[in-house]
Length: 418
Length: 117
Image (cartoon, rainbow over all chains, first blue to last red; front, side, top):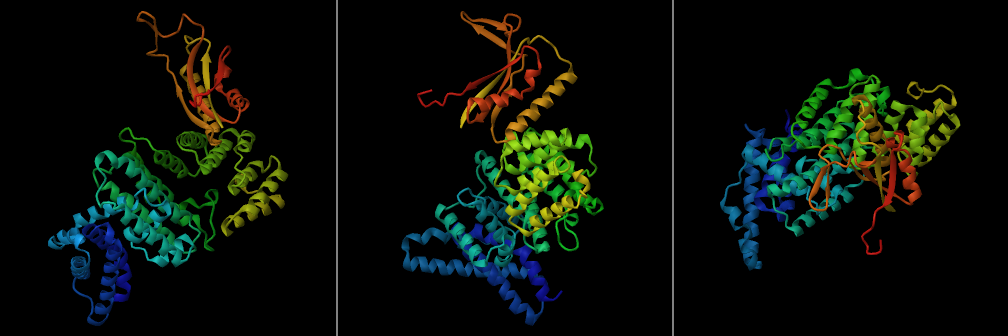
């Protein structure tokens, strides 16, 4: 492999490891510096390797250079502190003495700690996702901006503010104490869930990037499973959910990159290895007495891996949504529950319930009403689809709604609408 | 928005239903509650099983369950959010408990604990 190809590949995998270890070594106040040191290390690699050729062990080379840069930084910092700020003298005195430990064990351990630091409740969820992508997944600012569909400047500001906040709060790079770990773990799981969704539902046209986001989220969940304290049923449930969802990656888009809805998907393009993994983790999740919304969502996702419509499938999905809504209301769960209701009790029953939801500023609500009214009252179906079309915020959704409207007007309803 | 408790009263707690019948009721109840939860109006709820029920009276008199002595027993409750008692009553009308002859759902507003109610 040429250095130009090797470096981005190495960057992803080594960036997060190095940054995590250096952050832990230097303390939360030096997060920015840790990032810079690692970036500089890669820059040195690019300069050196391009001329001198690859070193025999590129990873070891990176670790040595990063360690040296880190030591220099600490020394400089200490000099600065001694000369200018006497009272800060002791701050990093210890870290100079101890060696920077880049063993596999310490890397995993540091990454896990950083995961808890970044998912600290003091910073906003958006910033948690951004920082996770940067620090834990080694994504570039450009890539993060791409995934969020905002510009670099916005991401830079968001990450800067989050780091300042963590510094101000003086968040320690430790795992929470056992008594607090459960509550903090919930926060970590929420962030990883959002990170996954960011990839799964992202509007970004870069499909490789989207899949990467999902895979990175899964890797981080896996990281939690490797630690005894965080290897918990709800973590398995979350991973199970992610496996089931990502099994449909290939089938979700056609060759033109347009979204293919679930009922139109070619199930031979589903990834059955991931489905099997999902089933494995769902089984692990059912050991013990923990019960979380991830259990319910994984259950729902499991039933969706069975393509054929049958009453058992929709009965189960409906009951799982009933439970999910009791546990935690969300508009999307309310809409999906009503769709499941129509599969079990018929459209008329579902229409009665749907009309009560009154989610009048949610365009998916009108898509649902449109679907339910198909064949019952086509005028009302058109009316609702048109309303949804007006409200839809993105091209993909508008495309789907337009297709439905056309089919309705031409009198040839799609099969699942009959 | 107020909170109301819907209390399910069964006419006769001694009536034994078949397991199949119980399963049907359970599913209907879950669908009914799911419908309320889908409107973000569900707060909480509990079934109150008849086994291990006791009634404690003055002078440390403890009896097994309220059954046999009184006609009605409370089988459970849910708490809902509603703008008015009328809305809460509409929720109550959907309760599968009402399929049983003589059963009833009592709708009661929950005191806010603000010193007035």
